Image (cartoon, rainbow, N blue to C red):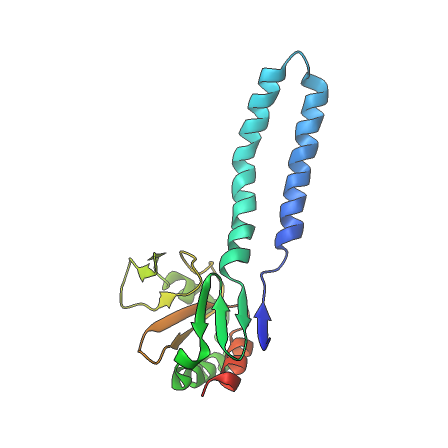
Length: 174
């Protein structure tokens, strides 16, 4: 494994949310059961509404923004891209651009300009690069980098450390 990136704090956050929900439902159950079982079940179900997004967002980040780079394959989320298909010139150009920095404003601009991807196509603006990994958009404020394949397709990769990813990628593309 030449490079690996995983989203931070997904499991502890999810376990904390579940623990708070279980404790709250149990505390209500002690006071309400057995005579108010219907009301207890209804309130417990209503409390699931804010819990589901709190669990879905970290799961989605873990699923769609994990990056693994080996000598043969770049895996971003659900997609696998053979390293031999990546254009070395685009990697070196992206590395030169990423090394200059840009800070928070560049990250916000990349999030805003990622469009909206559905089934591998950008539905907002087809001229924008395709977001790799299976997610619908780059998380707001997250850094990203654009590389190209040898066939000319531009790929947008959301990564916490674009320079580190591009350095690792530059070491394996030929």
